[in-house]
Each structure stands twice: as C-alpha cells, then as structure tokens.
Image (cartoon, rainbow, N blue to C red; front, top):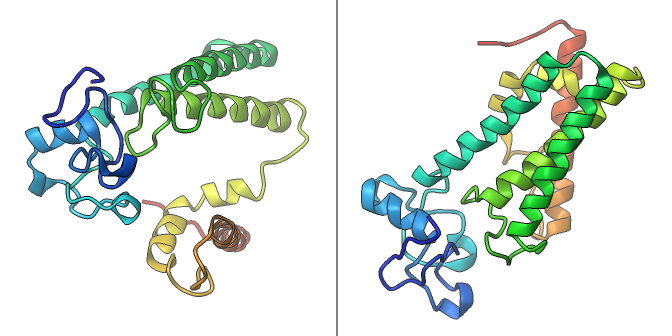
Length: 226
C-alpha cells in the first residue's frame, strides 16, 4: 500500500490533499487508499463531501471506510480475538492480566515506532480516517490497558460494579438511535463558537444526558433490543 504511486502524487502519500502542504498535492486526497477506491469503485460510489474537505478543501470524493481499510479492520478484530482467547484459556487473574498487558506494551511500542512517537509524522502516521496500522496498534494498546484495569477493578478486587456505564450497554440500540435523531437538538447540543474546549464540553454533556436516560430506563426495567 505504501509503495502505490498515484499519478501526479508522491509515493507513499496518505494525506488529505487539497490545501494540505500548501496545496502541493491538491488532487491526492487519501493518497493510495483514495486512489484505489476511485479506481475500483469509481468516484460516483464514494462520499462526495468527506469531512476533511471542511478543513482542507479539495474536489476529490473520498470514503474513509474504503477497501484498504478492511484489512486493518480485520487486523483489529484479530487483536480483539486475542483478548477473548486469553480470557477463555487462562483462569487465573494474574495470568490474564500479564498477557493483556504484554499485548498492550507490544502493540503500543510498535505503534510508537511506526509513527516515531509523533502526532502527525513518522513512517506511518496515526490516521483514523485511513485506519492506518499505527492507529490500529495505538488504539488496541489503549484497549488492552483499559480492559486490564476494568477487569482488575470490577472482577478481581470488586471495587466497582461498572455502573452507570453498564446501564448504557444494556440499552445501546436505543441510545444509538436516540443520539442519531437528536444529536443536533437542544438540550444535547446548541450553537457555540467551535473550539476544541467547547466541542469537548458539549460532547461530554450529551453523553452524560444519555447515561442518565439509560440509568432511568434500567430502573424502570425498560430494555429495547433487536
């Protein structure tokens, strides 16, 4: 993938194109990933207004869940499978925690090496839209760490029941549909000056409201499933 050369674009480019790098690669949106999608699927079958256009402009359609992203998605599922196999094969908490943390350290170190422990640089930068290998490994490392912490706190030492978050998990379909229908409505969201801090607060506020709704539904014994 990193050796694919798109016409009029540098080899190994995976940037957003448009105005990125002073517009040097204006029509190279998505690099090789976008090029392969446009080649195999055709431009009309891709997102015509990708989110990256808001910042970088450009004219090329681009689908962040493209063909090449399937391979890294499968790899992420494989890493999740390892967590499950450890849970089934090893019964002692210590054995489980050691192996999960080993995976966390291994995937985290490889991700750091690939991106050179930087935010936007390195051989393979961390890129969520492309689901790059470094992004998969970095998020997997964090997931292994969080799994280990939750397992130790909830199941081993019994320090926390998992509430109120397990209430949300028991009504996840309802919360997902509700969020899709109301995410731009008051009181979940309102018009503010768009800054990172404001967006963080509004998203945390919206999440808190849905958790409160999930707790209320749990107490009323209301569960919506498929």
